Amino acid sequence: MRIDILTLFPGMFEGFIHESIIKRAIEKGLVEINLVNIRDFTLLKNGQVDDTPYGGGSGMVLMCEPVVRAIESVKTDDAKVYLTSPQGVTFTDDVASQIYHETKHLILVCGHYEGFDERIKNFVDGEISIGDYVLTGGEIPAMAITDCLTRFIPGVIDEESFQNESFKDGLLDYPVYTKPREFRGLKVPEVLLSGDHKKIEEYRHSEQIRVTKEKRPDLLK
Image (cartoon, rainbow, N blue to C red; front, side, top):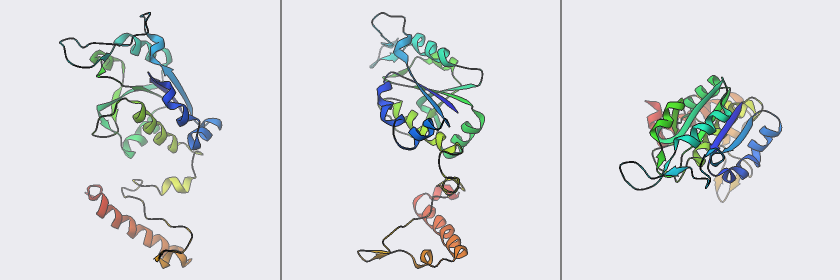
């Protein structure tokens, strides 16, 4: 899978692409992640990419020219282009799965300042939000989306771990434990020490239901 991230601040992604699982996935050739600086595509000599909004108001608005030119510089026939925006469809595991299975080349455009010139939306396929709150820019959402999608790629993480994650069957994940068996009076459930895989599977499923009822009952509706 190829992911191009269009941003005004590519330096924010240095740790993201050079550490941990994402770094290993890139090194294995399982995913290609490219950073594109939107400022490189402005026609203004001072590097300006934003301006004051028509009609007045606070903040600065990202201009059409540099954003659209940046999109066109990397767009392929297979590409899907999304803006990171609080107005977008909420990014869920189901949305992530759909994007992954339908998209070979993903282009994420990071918003900033007061937002995008509305006309930019004529050059994209949609908008994605990671939640009902506002951030200073779209870089963190782009990282979250990229991280989530990368986990779908075979070989990035262990297949069994992937299948047992939260939301895979509409439920949250079950509680997990490791050594020691007892810590300050808190013990690991005996069933997990029994070696009886059928009982362990039944226990974990019942715990998924319990945890989901307690923490996210909306998922059960």
